[in-house]
Length: 208
Image (cartoon, rainbow, N blue to C red; front, top):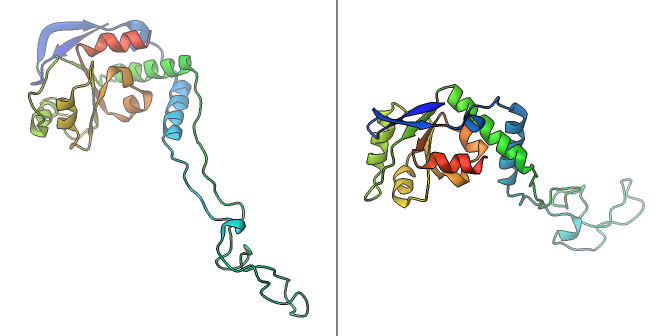
């Protein structure tokens, strides 16, 4: 399984990259993708929602009316949940939404997501490049060279490159990530994945 390497001007070069069939060519597992994406989204939830219950409401504790003879139900406190401004019954409390997915399932999910992208011809291999300084227009030229300026793109690098990252940060539909942080959600969320030539080996090593 080979893919041609492109330069940053969008043209094919004479070089080719051989992709590991056991990673990019497997039969995709939809359920593994579902589990991994669900975990990613759940783990990103803050879980800080909170309402005040009866014991947390500030207010007088005096009995607001006499016990009998009013013709209505007895009431002992202004903090009663039945009254306006009272405490909330069974309100939300801070909690963790974290979920657990086994490492093998997570690997299978990433392989499956990559296999789908490759099958749909949404994976491009780029020659390694660097920017001397952060410049959004330079990064946009690369995206436009492949006709992807209106689509969501994910660029995978082999190491942290602040100039490339900063150049892409202002573009709404573009994201840059290093190969060790590649996850199923980012893969499935992007319309096209651009992988630097040097990043392929790292992806294959991680997912073996």
